[in-house]
Amino acid sequence: MSMAPWLSRGRLAVLGTGQALPGAPISTDDLIAMMAQRFGFSRTREAAAIARRLGVESRHLARNFKDKGDPARSGTTNSELAAKAVQAALANAGLQPRDLAYLIGHTTTPDQPLPANVANVADRLGYDGPHVELRQACTGFANALMIAFGLVAAGSGPVAIVGSETGSFFFDPAALDGEPDQIVNMVQMGDGAGAVIVGTPEKGRPAIVAAWFGALGRDRAPGISRQHHTRRFDHDFAAIRAEGHRLFDAGQAAAALQGAPIEAAHHVIPHQVSGRIGALAAAHFALPPERMFVQADRIGNTGSAAIWIALDSVRHNAAPGEQIVILGAEASKHMYGGFAYRHA
Image 1 (cartoon, rainbow, N blue to C red):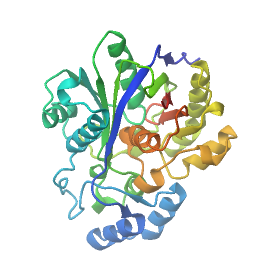
Image 2: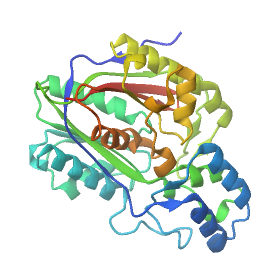
Image 3: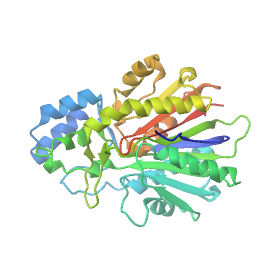
């Protein structure tokens, strides 16, 4: 029997949001053609078919793929993208790095294992305060929020949360013909970072009014994993398919427990795993497809960054009083999390 999810208490003001995407978008057709030309990739039809099934038409990438081990372009390392996203969120909030009480980062593709990626982010921001990093993918945002709720309730100043991914470095383009599961990494993933600044709730401010996090993965095989010393993600597609609907159902139940039923939301941001997820989630929940906000078709699956990028994109067009419910899911050990955002 699964344990109940952890539920937040109170609310957090959303002071600002921001995002950073590296360079211009590259289409799926151009990406596949590049792999064929530079690395002799021959399974081009298979790659195009996978991309169509996923509904990913373009993404932003931090590397040029001039060779199989090329570094990030200038300004597009994981920590550089994360710092740019925090800077954008600070500007949106009208704050400076010195105004932050805490900095929380979450990523699965850090610049290096140690020191933590977020320490490099702090350096780039010129931020001297405390920071912490979570090694978590698509539900890192939810655990980061739980920490932020506690910090703000204890009387801290503003807290910055940033999710960042540079997944394009975690597959070998020269090995694609021999490792077909890595084709999914190539066409599905996108690079980027998203950030939010939260603080003490104030009347008239946009707010996160509820949040939750739970796990269903005990004794279950991981759906996606990365082993020590490897620069590749491995997928267990059967495990992902088997557990996906359970994670969405658990998120729906947690939202209802927190007084934020998805049926009443003006918009729903589902796990940004693919460009097709909006239609699939709408059908699963019997909701109108137009209520779903998905941008993975344009920027790919940005992993730990996806929810904050989506929130930054959708809130700038939200009307006063609208409520947005986020339903995050993570295949690694089948975790779920989310929050309800109310626009001022």
